[in-house]
Image 1 (spheres, one colour):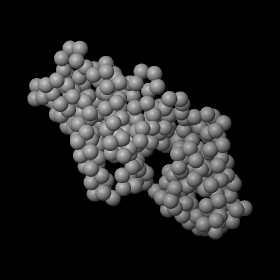
Image 2 (tube, rainbow, N blue to C red):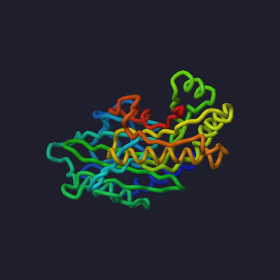
Image 3 (cartoon, one colour):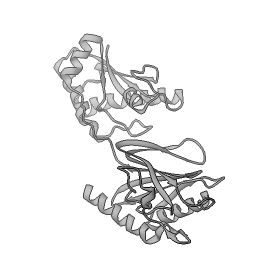
Image 4 (tube, rainbow, N blue to C red):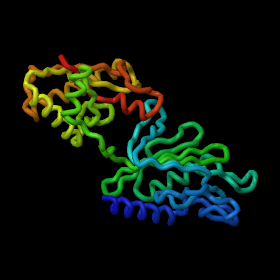
Length: 293
């Protein structure tokens, strides 16, 4: 899959390179920054867009193997996409009064995305200062947003994928927590964004809950869903309730646990274990807890 994705990006890059971003200045074409205006150390163009607008250098960049970005929409809410996140900032270094307009930048990237079979998802309806699009190659979904500011172009790309779950629930550890505090947090249960649909990679964590219950036939638990503080309060309460119920049903249906030993509940955003001011904190708050009845 990794090789297929790299190959796809190369094909995408070749298509965009052939297009040349559709923009030319007198005496120059899209390409690498001049030696006098070198790119920020460690930064480079993304394979999806191997060429750039003339007279721009990379002034900043960041890559997260698993992150997210909330892509702009003409009206709320924004579209949140998770996966490998790349941020690149370009700074204009050309002649005074030679900087391209926001419309020129937007049209260039629109054409580049469409040239390789991508679709434009949304763009700034007023001033043509941003555009985002989606490209699907070999089953890999890639989202890109381009923003134009004074002297700047910001590029954000997310190669959509599910998070690799390294930390899994353990029946023994959950049992220890329940005996000591009356509850245990479970972080290996994942859901589709904004839904109560359990993702397949949650099977191991649910299996460990079942192992805990089978080891102690007298144990009865509340399966409690929790969310972060993003979104409407009432919707978060319902979502957390639905997620708790989804886990309960999975334990009954797939693991043979008696329904009489389980009850579901939803706390919404009202029992955080970390600050909701950061993505790391919000991720900790999105959890399922087992509470002894």
